[in-house]
Image (cartoon, rainbow, N blue to C red; front, top):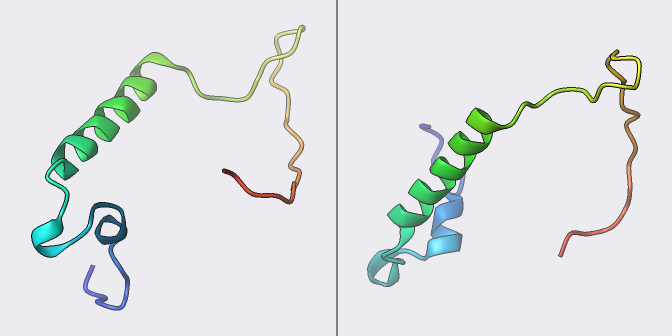
Length: 67
């Protein structure tokens, strides 16, 4: 990206400058392998009902936070 006003999330998670985390490449590679494995092994889609037809899920907003 050419827009310099957008902050890099890696700088907050792994630090920057001399105190940058040396394991950043391992972390990125591990996340890539995990996502690639999930995409290769699992089948993502709508759930099927007893009759074999796809069921539509209801969208719902739940207030709260993830810890």
